[in-house]
Image (cartoon, rainbow, N blue to C red):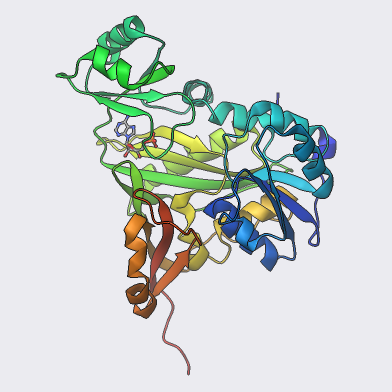
Length: 370
Ligand code: AMP
């Protein structure tokens, strides 16, 4: 079940209004790309003066479950999409009764819950990390007996950037690990001694057409993305397996929009999916400066049913996130040749907060003629 009718698959031509649920930097960069193609964006989020609102044509500041606000939003936009996948299910269905919602509610339902997501990916024939459901101390003991430490205990819902994760080592007391989860339903995953982490961003239009950006290599620090490097420097068969996994999942889910798939490359070259996100992704930010069509433009094209753009890389790129106080390096970054600085307009640089990013390019083109 996709939650979409055929009628939902119509094109929204330039001049239309794109509704974006969520008000962070992903919405901001989407709204900027949408403006380039002649669209206006209307953001719906609970916080005032967020990164998206600052650049959007219109804003609704309301709780995600405010029915009257959702209805008014639906009648003010031509299509709704998400820069944040944890919008309540009921709200998405309410919107879907009034306006095309892309991707459909089923995509969000799957990606909101790590357990549902892992089962779905496995059923699509794509390898994932070993996992087991954990609902209490007893099932944690059973899961540990099956998967064994080292393992990672994660909440199934609302977890991102390592939030709601506990490393379970052979020396860890399971009762203590369970207590740290605060009673939330969890998933125990085998710890993967990976060679590297990669991701692939796929775009898929209402007609099922797909386009993908090449696999990129990601390095995390404290569970938060630190750098993304393109090209990833993978063996060709590893890169092909990563792309195949991402395309399979996007098609199985009937995604309309973007799907980012994060994967571990293990020592024997196999890829295991860690998690998916049905929206633009931090590991796709490099595409703004290094590809003819960025992930944000591609997102707008897919959601509006336009032909998908050219995702080829014209420059090698390393994207580095600016977390917390690192943003204060902006004067030096502005002065650095080949560095493309992107700041998100967040007033307060709290620890762990994504404040901006810088993409350093190594141009592949020949010498300039003048
Ligand atoms: P997540 O929130 O699941 O994306 O986790 C954030 C980061 O934590 C990942 O990108 C990995 O660097 C690390 N991580 C998460 N799960 C595992 C695992 N099962 N094995 C090894 N590292 C992991």
